[in-house]
Length: 188
Image (cartoon, helix red, strand yellow):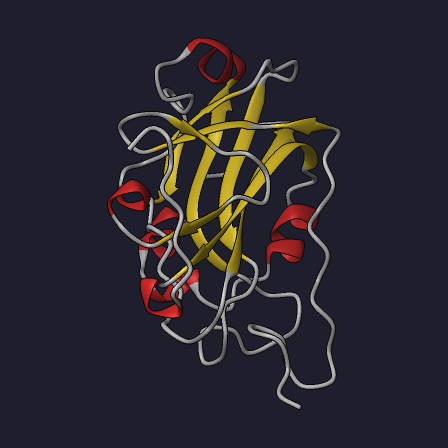
């Protein structure tokens, strides 16, 4: 039998990271709140940069959005992801009171809307908010900005290498319209 989407043969789907708190995420211009596990299709709702909010206690945060189920050739090794968004050094005041929740942060990877390939099933897209112990170095931002750097990304090495602590998360499922899975959000 073929391996599940985004998983190498004889591997198991990686579990979603578990955070102590739920990250408030709103999609689209209407601000449709993400309820964990909600299924969306690709389309206009996904194209707008999400808004996030969190009652933060640390000084600085990193926000990531990753596709945990991207198939080959986008993923070549187990435990790797496709990075759809990365913002470093987000001040706590921005998460709690900012219009988009990321003001004052350093955009490392622009928002790349979910777009699972037709026929690849539903993909899990997870927002991960990490507390930082110190400001992250910004000496390699050009490499982060390249489109190819998003694929086959070792999130575990990044988290360990920067001594990050998971503070909050949220996730949704997304599939290509060709899969026949439809969801009409309340805010669209």
